[in-house]
Image (cartoon, rainbow, N blue to C red; front, side):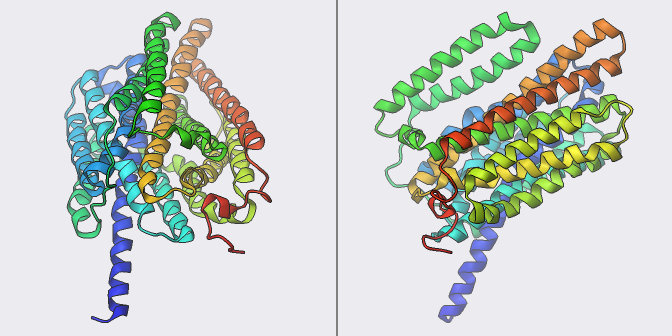
Length: 481
């Protein structure tokens, strides 16, 4: 075999490896929108209350957010491919549990298991993709593809759910995860290296503190809708204490889950905040819009999937192109534009009423997809800028943690807004459709306000594009014109 043959073989193996890792990423995000699209059917079949509906939609991102930080370290210690395969298997088992569930508690349990599996898949898939190339430009392109695959999963979720809901019912929706997980599980050994980070040790106290803090925060938000503000006091106090314990432990640990020094970088800190808000908006707005289509406009499952493509499709396309935009302008204007465009889309979607045709509604969906597409790849590249392979898993896990925390909070906060506002509106008007439509408007307004407030961060904390070009973020090699 000649050198060129060996080089081509390594290139093909790397490409297939990226494809398998990205398939795991796609599967993890497909579950989010597939679950959201199935909520109405699950509620009708199992008789879920509004609070139980929020619990079902929050369970998967809750488990993912709570466990993903330790999962990145587990990949470094045990082998990233091994952990990717283990996560795929756990996710498949959770999907089987969910698909056979006959109660709200069983659905929540299955979603929690799926979230635990996804927590193992997402950070290790990013580490595997990022470690494939040492050249910053090729690395950023690969990370951009990985980030875009989250959009592919989010776009495919409503369509697959709609088809399966129409043909078989909601139980079949989760079997897609089983099929995809088995492909990742079986294909990974052939194309992915089982890389480790020598000397990396799992920080058990830090991991436990972080897990408790994230889980308690999300539970506190859900409790606001279930029992009002007093019911959230206990979980919120636990979250604060666990966060304080995490900071103390990490400062003293020889092998921290996250090096707190990473957070001292204004670029990394801004990227983490924007990533949190982006997934808060994405998951929360997607949940609200799906419920609006189904509850207010009477759209069935497959029709919902097709309409959501006007949001998911632009997201996928723009995510794939966002790195090129950053190379020309720098990261700051891209992040600001993404946040403002997403807020504009939420406000535009809010401006429509129950009788408005989708022909007049879709521009709001389009703007949300475009805006969010401008946020995912640049925040990923910024968070990983200048890091060696040993710290990529740590930073990737931190990034994924804040994203999934945002996803969990998006569904919980905006879902709680919808449930509480619709109940209040129903008491006032007695018209359930009008009450729910008003609640959707309130939730979209909350999302827009959060996005607009966050847009100030990159303006204040990041340097100008001229003094902080894309090279500084690792998006292109040093000296590239």
